[in-house]
Image (tube, rainbow, N blue to C red; front, top):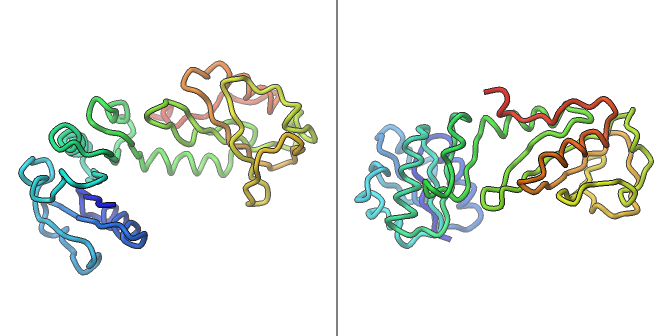
Amino acid sequence: MRIVIAGAGAVGRSIARELLSHGHDVTLMDSQADKMQVASVADADWILADACSPDALAQADVDVCDVMVAATGDDKANLVISLLAKTEFAVPRTVARVNNPKNEWMFNDQWGVDVSVSTPRVITALVEDAVAIGTPVHLFTFPKSGASMYSITISGQSDVLGRRLADLEIPHSAVVAALIRDTRPLAPLPELSLEEDDKLLFLFRSTGEDDLKEVTGLFSNDAELPYDPAQED
């Protein structure tokens, strides 16, 4: 694939190196000369220009790229870049970095964003996932469908210990996507019996909020409400 990345800071360069290692063609662009550390990602094409400008995007041949990544440290710039890429250059796929979680609500298809990635939100969710027991932790929301992924770690006091997955009364809006046991991901086979510290990955429809609370009660008698980093804002 051909991928253009706007924002050649540490995040943009790291993304570029990963994509290059997977065999993709990458162009990095930034408006600040001090960000043009060409030697750090020598295999990428580099352009010194403001990606918020249609002329700069045309210079980067965005009209023939497969993915536009807006990875600057400015949320306003990332929205403008995504919108221009989608509306002016018909880029098939846009990915935008969210720097401030309070701005997440804007990063949608109305601004030309296909996939948004909130680094603070991801880190917070991973920290909570590492320590939360018996409480669903929101890991990710799929932009197009609105479906959300949650993890639940089984506590030693849970009523579901020793029960098979097939015996759990899981709401129709929820799907068990995987079970992680001792760092090993397992297929959620109906005959699997739950053990302490098992981690279940659930997918919920966008309309499954009430069912999420039901699942919360299923895994712990005195469980708290599901944790969502948005409540911290």
